[in-house]
Image (cartoon, rainbow, N blue to C red; front, side):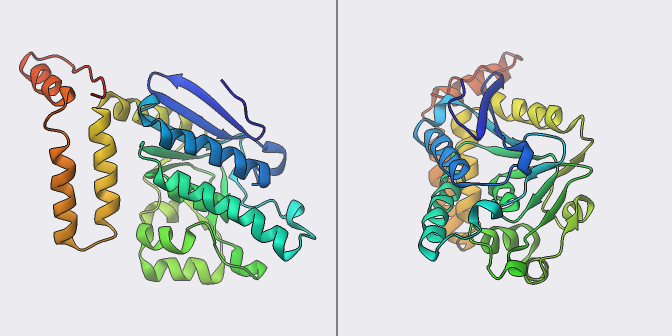
Amino acid sequence: MNAFETVTIEAPQEHTTLVTLNRPDVANAMNTQMGLDLLAVFDGFCAEPNRQRCIVITGAGPKAFCAGGDLKQRNGMTDAQWQDQHLIFERMIRAIIDCPVPIIAAVNGAAYAGGMEIALCADFIYAAEHARFALTEVTLGIMPGAGGTQSLPRAVGGRRAKEILLTGRPFSVQQALEWGMVNRICTAEKLLPEALETASVIAGNAPISTRQIKQSVNMGLNTDLRTGMMFEIEAYNRMVPTEDRREGIRAFNEKRKPVYQGR
């Protein structure tokens, strides 16, 4: 099932795709190839959203989710080479953000810089007890360029985000939970099973409904309440003529679990 150099793609359970950042020898740091691989993977999810109902993204190995950009590869790059690589990362991040399928990040270790930005692209985050987070770009003479200055304030609020961004200081998983960035802390052993269990619950719901809910929440966060409510009703009306809506009502009245087809 896998045709990528730096990312593995698996189907651990029905309707769920597991994406693993797979450069454990370098803390799953993002090189150009990983950017290209993730761009291809998530472009594929965007093009064929019906092929999976939930996506879990994690990192290989016990220590790191993703350490951010591969600074060894970047050492000595010309300005043009740096910008060419970053354009790939920008397109990759947009593909993840634009993915209509629900995404859970299972952060299995350090998520720094671009790694934390990838986690923030998910709809929510489960994290291992030993996970740590940081947006360290300011300490390197740059700034987050993969959505960090936009997604972090939406997760933790503007003032907390500016403290994190302007200092570059790492913070713990407990702090991330308290600030609203992480939904659940898990033991290392239970992280992936718990993420996959939640993915199974999501995948068992009507897939058109879950995609429309995700889109409605994302749209509402970026507009005023009245416009968001109007979008919600348009999204709701998409449900009415579906076979899944009819199946849900039938199953409720027949006291059985619904079987959704995504139609």
